[in-house]
Length: 210
Image (cartoon, rainbow, N blue to C red; front, side, top):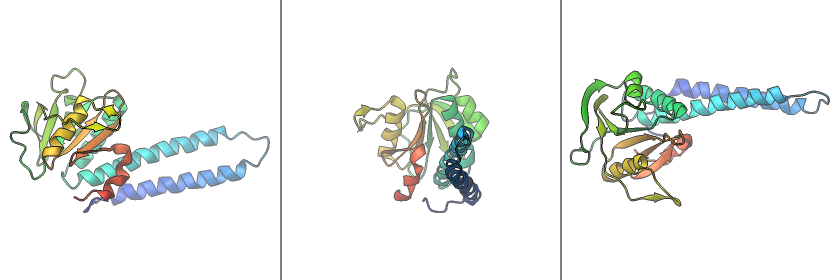
């Protein structure tokens, strides 16, 4: 788990969801022995609860990680979840200690505080700014439509798309964190130290030294 993570409320809510799911499974296990009864609705209920818990867990771990770098991690977390649901592609650079001058081909200056509505507008399909990366530093969206250096990495047996190669390329050269949402799959991931981590697998963040 990332150090200095302050996400206790969402953690408690996640535990409550998991406890409720466990109770529902136990009741269903006992009810299965009752012949002549159909329990498909109970399976559906458990499935819905699991999806909510999974979404909450993703938000929890993403929030924990982002809180180490920006005070506006909640807006970023909500944005990522929304972009995933809509399958809107996105590339978000969070600058840390290393200067990114000379690594990024600057795009359009923004100079506005990070908010969900602004991020959503920038990455809305058809917006002239949505294809490039936005740069966030000190909780300010510095610029949009930035071009990042591309990595030549191949993950597994598949070649990466441009957004993922750009995320890896910048994090191979700096300590920045880059969030990526694929418009093809709706999946989100982040790059750090030249490695991609899927949002759905953020439990592995306790292996990352910040």
